[in-house]
Length: 293
Length: 197
Image (cartoon, rainbow over all chains, first blue to last red; front, top):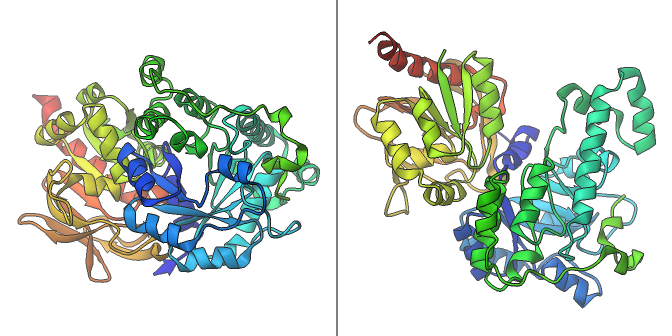
């Protein structure tokens, strides 16, 4: 029996497809998420909008919170480690967390190197804004990707930009002549072998979810329309007035993203969504998507 | 040609479609209960069983799926789909569809880091089958008349009860389409007499 193989790690993400992964900060929220039909939960100490507000250094969550969430639900539990923080990642792996997010939402521990994710038995998801980032993370062993978006803003514009860009670059690569791929690899700082694999398969070798700024059921459906395999919803759900109802609406809109009458029904009287931030109003140094190399 | 549906609420739908098509059958992604009428067989894919169950309830799939099984048309559950098919699920008062005469236990091999690949011998399908287990359930006991098709580490991981086929692992994650071919064969057998009547 072989554990931690690419197939097992990437396959786990395949099982999440068409689903919603929700940020939670305690057992009670995790249960609401599971009841609403989430395919997994991300156990955090604070949701991204609160991290943004609190400022300072954001780190791995208190293991007590992660443990509490793991004991509360039977669906997979994910957790975030800082970029390049080998020990936070090893600690979460040792606790039996099902999937790790090497995440720009937390303050990076290393401004030069990401984790060598192929060294771990636990699978990783990483953020990407373009094919270069996507291919570098796959090269390091990420088994799942997500757009970076701009977390904690309730503004979908960056997630849309990143999803469109990656997909457009994949299409371009697929139709390119093979003798042009090395230069493409040089331009994007992308490993050549990963680009050749994408070209051969006609798509990314791992699933790509949308994340960062999804605030309404229509936002979730938009990201599916643009080719996302599923969505992460962070601050949106438990910052809304009626989280259980909101969570159910997001799940349904993700499954039936082209059923517009249904989305209209789901969107009625959901209460005030999170207020949202204009990206231009966030100083460059405070933009989480710039983190990662 | 058999027309095989894949329940398309959540999970590894695309991979099953690919495997059905690789066997020369027609695949249909089922998102609405009325689509079940036109099918010769149905695959319940891998994914998250709790999430799929919520969507089954919300879109009124429960009774149409049970009626589909009772009509004698074959159903094949992989991983989460196996849990949906089972007559009994350890730790739960009620089963989901409750169609197949087996008892299953969820996540019985452990969490994701214990997920694995292993070589299996599957009765009537293959004796050299590479199976991918992801947070997999296993079949704790097979009821009367249920044929055990494969075991792994002393646990039942594939079985057939009449026209119901189930496995703990994910045939859709490899390029080995033999178990899907076996299921399509089941659907063709049921379809054949109907076509001539």
